[in-house]
Image 1 (cartoon, rainbow, N blue to C red):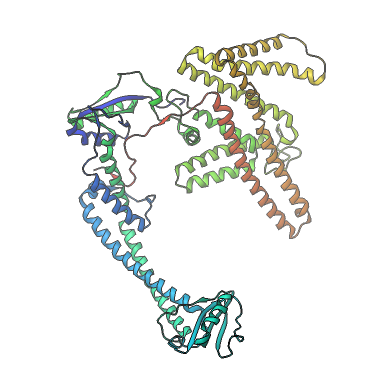
Image 2 (image 1 turned 180 degrees about the vertical axis):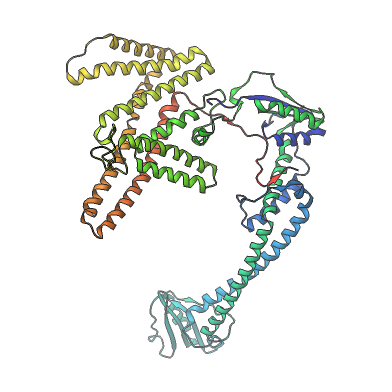
Amino acid sequence: MFEPQPMTKVIIAGSKDYMNIAVDAMHKHDVVHIADFVDEDEDFKIGKPDERITNLSERAVSIRSIASYLNIKGKEDIPNKYPEGAIIDTIDAKTKQLDFEVKQVTNSISEIESKIKDVKDKKRLLEPLKSFDLPLDLYTGYRSLAVFVGTLKGSLTISDITSDYELETVPYGRGHAIALFVPREFEDEVLKRLQEQSYAALPLSEMEGIPKDILANLDAQLTELQSEKQKHEEDVADVRQKYIEYILASDEYLSIETQKAEAPLRFATTKNAFIVEGWVPTKDLEPVQRDMDRATNGHVIVAVDTSEAEDVEKVPVALKNPLPSRPLEVLIKAFSIPKYDEIDPTTLMTFMYPFLFGIMLGDIGYGAVVIALGLLVSRRVKSKGIRDLAVIGIYAGVLSIIFGFIFNEFFGVEVFGNRGLLTFIQYPVIPRLDNVLILLIATLVIGLLMLSLGFVLGFVNEYRQHGLKHAVFAKVSWLCMLWGGVLVITLILPPLTSRTGIQLSVGLVGGLAVAVIGFVLLIMGEGVIGIAELPSLLSNVLSYSRLLSIGISSAGIALAVNKLSYALFLSKGGVFIIFGALMLLVGHAVNTVLGILDSGLQALRLHYVEFFTKFYRGGGIKYKPFGFERKYTEEK
């Protein structure tokens, strides 16, 4: 629960003749974490991939290209797994047939799309001229006339250049479309005048007829082409439906075979033998040894490596937590995976994170919304990480409801008691806005308890890693200063505030003694530099006051939304009730979002910054077994 799965270091060695069989056996078990061989010398070389790798890669590229075009993303579900044997027997012929069918349809769609582009280009050119009744062939072919057809932004005046011209103009976009005929001798001057008005010439295509008639014909062509394209797209959908199971299964099969073919790149090899160094969960060691011996007739052995002391820095870490705690692993991994000899805080976080979240949100209504959102997301979203966060949200929502009953809050309204909506239900409650001092003390006590637990866990880690002496200097010192300081402050604060004078007592002397012992141990362990870290102890404790500040702000916003909605709208009745309801809905929706974000992030910060730093470093190697989690295929 608090430690990762026990691992055993193994050496897998045998004849190269049985290497592929050994790879298959390792892959089937999906438990061997291979340590890559990188230090080549004259005796051992990095292995070479299986000769099938080129063919497998080509097949994979072909299948994935087809899948991409058919919009098959590898996240789809299929009713039944595809037998691996059926893929092996038909993959070449079926892939060629599939490739032929897809190319046939895609080529047709490409041709149609090219035609559609041509039609749209022609329409774009003719659109400015659709109001002109002059046939296109009359805009060209003159010796004595210069013709300007295009668009310009401003208004055109050329009467000062020549009065001998013909001009058609219609509004178009932010300017005008023009057709201008002038004698050839004025061509240059008129062009210069046009350019001053941002003139853009329209290249007339080799078409005949009146523009509006041509456009009508182009519209008909476009409709026909789009209809034809739609039919071919339906053919693509049919091909997708026909082959989706095969494509998904083939891609998975090729991924598995490629992984196996590339495995020797991670091995040490000689001319006749291969050696694999890795790690296996201790509980899986015996089945791996038995099946490897059976598969290779004893020509490959799986031996426990006891040749050197275990280096915990190199041991891969597989988290081992009870089912309810596993969603919290996403938060641990976001920080860092624990080292092999380090306490895994996932199970502790399962209780502590929702607890801190619930204290801050602390409202029955908001908690119910959080639970509803968590349930919705966990059922609708396929991503495991998002689903894990949703489950964490459900945990946090439950604690928010529990603290909502304690604080007597339902969307900022008192529910129970003499001032509540349900006066007939009475029990001791702690309204946040009326008990700020009590709750502040409670949050600081929570901080003290969490920090103390952190130092205790840190002591265990240090004892495992460096021995008792180092653990005492590194963690007992801080624990003594923490509680010695708390005892001293608790005893001197009341006299200071009441100005009655500080009285020496056994508790005060004992607290000072414990704090001084802790300080001495700190100096002995960390030297003078440890003094620089003393202020962080106080800041860590005070940091837990954010549990109250976030909660008070959320309760205050909820109260403000309720008061304003009633004063501005609900109290007036009639149609104003609708506006009041909308204000309540929007206000509480915004406050819910703020509450989830603030409470979630601050609870996470109190773990990462204040709690984890007392015992947890992380930096472990993630356990990555050699294997594949099959989704679409089943072994033959």
